[in-house]
Amino acid sequence: MAEELSFPTGLGTSTPDTISLLGQDLAADLMGKVGFGELAFWLVSGRRPTPSEVRVFEAVLVALADHGFTPTAIAARLTYLSAPEALQGALAAGLLGGGSRFLGVTEDCGRFLALTLADAGDDPDYDAVALDAVRRAKDEKRFVPGLGHPVHKDQDPRTPVLIRIATEEGLRGPHLQLFEAIGRVHPEVLGRRLPLNGAGVCGAALADLGLPIDLLRGFALLARAAGLLGHLAEERRRPLGMEIYRTVDRNAVYEP
Picture 1 (cartoon, helix red, strand yellow):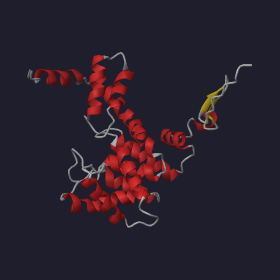
Picture 2: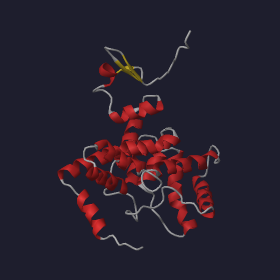
Picture 3: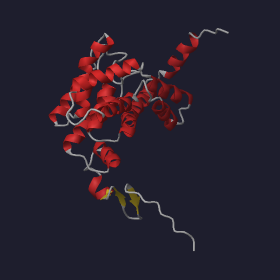
Picture 4: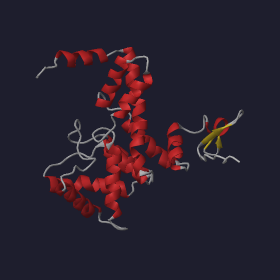
């Protein structure tokens, strides 16, 4: 007798008449009743978020959706220029650029904070813990993720707003508190003041929501997908890709 195969999942399934998602009837229980941000949180965490968690989570998604002509947006536009018949390729090209300098900082910061807190005990002195973490990073010649921004040299406007929202909802947890402490103490070690950037504060907020550290970059990509789709829609209305390409091509210098 052939072995019976089994592929268990707790996410979604369908029959000829119904679609089930997360144990709910998709059409009857979710459509028009659950927002996309709430659903995304639920799909990953396996539990329905509270209204307070939804507010913080969706604030993160909004904060990360777009930041102008970043490399990810330019990559999407130029790929669309090259292959306008493949929207999915242009969108994917932009998402593939989410790394250690753009978007990936969300996960990197969340991981840095989580690892630091793992050795900090139950009731840490956040400033002392932050000072030690920044010193160790400097000694090891590593960047502290979440510090600094190429455009916002004084303050990233997203950072205080997200901290305020998390505080209002009772969700300013240890990761955000440690991140704030890093903002206070790092000049003592680095000799200069850097802003706490939006990607970093988003990573701290997501970690305080209890979401898996290894998946935090995925939430940044989820948010940026909306921004990239906006760039591609604008590219259709007001094309810039050809001019970007020609500007680089005209100013290229051949140096054998």
